Every structure is written in structure tokens, then in C-alpha cells.
Image (cartoon, rainbow, N blue to C red; front, top):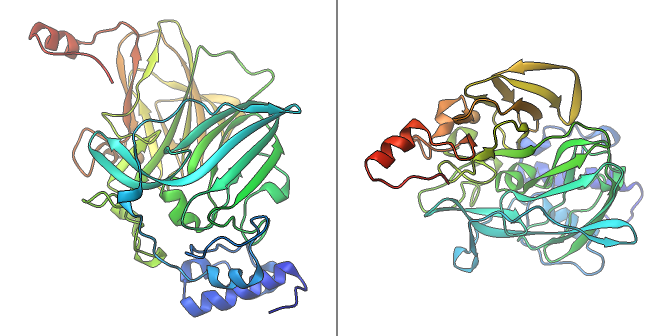
Length: 387
Ligand SMILES: [Cu+2]
């Protein structure tokens, strides 16, 4: 295994051999042993310590990657975080927008008092929103503080191939403690997202995703522009993540019991506050593995973009099925004051560990509007107010 020869052939050969040895059947599904045609490999997590040099793995370590070591987070040493930060602001260097992202474990609060072990970017789940303009030069200085190698894939963005974040094919996994710089031009415009693509079923499900918006040069002007990133979780009663201590084979997506919008379950979800007359855009991103039919009460939405691309013929709908990885942008005119529910119509998904109301749900609320429920509470002398 010392000769390099074809890098791709080598990687594939190692992966195929090791996968056979550990019988990671799911990963092996795309590997038929035909070296050149085999799809990208997925390196499983390892506790190997950082290698020297520039963050690129050496050949010997690659051979160890597929040994699927279940990871458990030392929760006593993991900070509890509950608030998402503001949009990630860049520094400017030679005309390039430079963003700093760090992947690290966190105990993420889904609702007050209920945390789940997660892997986040910059201490939050999902990672911070990144907003740039079409044509911007973007540099992301990324550091891996996870206990496992990782990469970032820029879903939907027209990056150079070597920036695409596919381990074993376009780059080596970034080891714990190591850094990697992603650089690309922001194009095309639209709603995108970023996420891990290494041991991806586990890493994405533990929270390694975030929204990435590229504003177009000639797009319509909106008064409000909301991002709603959907995800689901397996939270064990003690707050551990269902992915801790299990491999792919031990995982059943049917076990999802918590559902989040921008990392929060109702009633901790943030509402979409609008003013009468506002033109509102909502960008729904599905970072989870289940499809969610998102329904807005009170009016039809105008669906204007799919996966970031403007639709030649926008269409009206009151329920939009958002599949895994998909994005839908829709807009509406805020012309009917009230508090209008926005939620997933698989109603199991509007509960927190089966207790409704919860999960994938929030409200479009007009500023200053008091709904009937609030007025009743006020009349009884009870506290009112929204999250
Ligand atoms: Cu759903």
C-alpha cells in the first residue's frame, strides 16, 4: 500500500477492502469494486488523533477510517447552548469575504430544559446563516473541533470541484484539530445550504448543517426574508443523541421524536413577525431525512423558487412538500392581520416526543396584533405575549 499510482484507485481499493472487513453494508452499496466507476467513499468516524502537516490525511490513516467507532460525547465537558447567533459576518481581505466556521460538539437546547447532544458550527444548531451577494469571492476558514474527521459540502452552489467537500474523492477528510480553507465565487443566486458529507448520515443528523443565501443582482425586493431550516432528531430520554453509540445499522429513522425549525421545537421556535403590507419571502430548507409538507394557514403561498432557482411559472399552494435536501422559496403579501400557523402537516411532527403542540410549527404574526386567544387571556388577567 505504499505506491500511490492512481489516487482514486488507491482510495477506492482501501475503502472497498475495509468496508468488506467491517461490513458497513450501507456505505458499500455504491461500491461494486470497479475502481474507476465507484462513487465517492464515506469515511466513518475515528478517534485517531490529528496528523501532522496541512490537515490532509496520510495513506495509513485512510485505511483506519472505515472502522466505525461509535462516538459518545462527554456531556460534562460539552457546553449547553440555546441561542442561535446572528448572521455570520465576514471580514474582508483583498476583496474576499472571509467567514470563520468551527465544527464542535454542543448540548443544544431544543426547548427550555430539554437538550440533545449535537454537533454544530460555531456552537449553534443549525450553523450560522451566511448571506452573500452573487459574484462575491467567498473564503471559509474552517476548523474541525469534533472528535471525528469531517468536511463541508456546499449544497447547490457552483463551487470548483476541489471545493465540493466529498471525502476520498475531492478532498481528504479534515482531521480533528485541523483546518481547511474553502474558496469559491458565490454563484448562482438563490437559497442554498452547507453540511457535512463525511460519515454523512450521522454527522448531518447530529446537526452539521446551515443555510447559505446568495442574493441575486436583480431579484424582487422583500420587506421580510425568513429562513426556515427543518430538521429532526432522535433524542434519548437522558438527552443523548440517538446516533451516539450506534452505527448505521443500528439506526432507524422512524425513531425521530423531536422536530425543529432553525434548531428549535415549538414553542421555542421563533415566529415570523410581519407588518401589514409587507411583501414576505420564506425560504424553507429541509436539512433532515424526512419529507415535510409545510402548510400555511389563512392564505395561499406563491411558490417562486425550487432549490434556489426562480420558477418560470410560480404557482400557488397552501401546502408545499419539502423533501430531504430540497429548498422552496415562497412569498406572500401580509394583508390579513392575525397570527397564522405555519407547520408540517405530518402531525406527528408537531409534537415533542409525541406531546402536541411542539415540533415543526410557528406563526406568522402581525406586529401589534392580539388574537382572540390573547384577548381572552388578558380578560382573565393572565400573562400574554409571544416567544
Ligand atoms: Cu414533517
